[in-house]
Length: 119
Length: 288
Image (cartoon, rainbow over all chains, first blue to last red; front, side, top):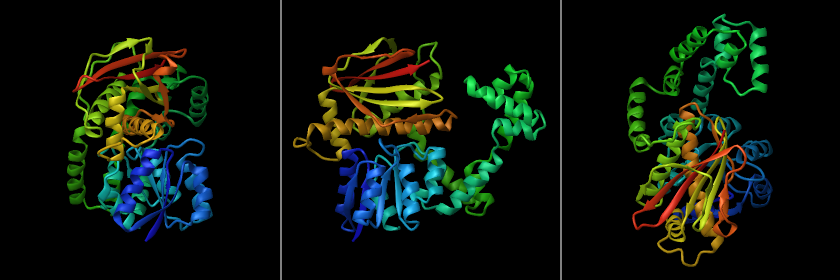
């Protein structure tokens, strides 16, 4: 079973994603970080197989955290989560920095699981 | 179910690989030159004049072409020539993918059709915006996507009233506020009743009942709804060349009093009634 670290300042979104992941039987939640800075710390302590990280967060946004995470571990599997509909610059920047893909909110359960299973 | 770009749609459909999409984006970036670079390439301005326009843009919020006209570097006709060149040479992401061999022309046609179908629900209908506000099309999108998302995400049928300019928003219960900046600057605010908050919470958490949920979680669902709406607005605005960059949202409670405009802001309100008569309000605090 793959361990997923959820990074989102919204408890509601984290809960929703956790429900989708645990309900699948293929994933377990390694932890919930509320911003990019927490994610960097928790990556080291929880050693997740995948990281699902929001783009727009207080303290440290997703792209800043992604840059650090990829520098720490170039093999990290990070999926960015956004409601921004792949807005041009941010979308391309996330892929350039090493994100595996970008998934949209609101979540579509099957789409999220299919994406994560392929990583 | 969201406004999205064609590239993201193709990734979601597994029609292209991430690395091919990146290559295509890079090809787009080298092909689709910015206004100043296009004017340079056309020999209409010198590098010195180019830098002069750039420097002046730091002091005054004008587009490159408008600033070049103001400084007497380009004529209006030359600006139009540059715009036409940019339009004619524009490379769309689908074409870029075909050029690098990541997608066939036939597949592109197929996915463009599927994309159109996917995005059809997000086509903006005409909403009347009072005269005198900057970038009225952005506020149309804000209102339109709010109504659509209330229905599609939260299952709330709404009956919007005519928009009006106000000097404050009087919250009934709770307001989810999201600041934005970029081409337009201000705050998006959605005031909801307790009943609407419950409906949004059930939809966001995908639960039949949210009776046991804490106030923090319930309020957070309203913020997440606002986040989803504003994210979609940002995507739609970007398709029109308007940047609408969102910052993390926050709550404002009725107990804290009205939400007033700050200096330089005007408030455009859209009173909304949901099907059961519950009043909610969209307020756009527009700077400038």
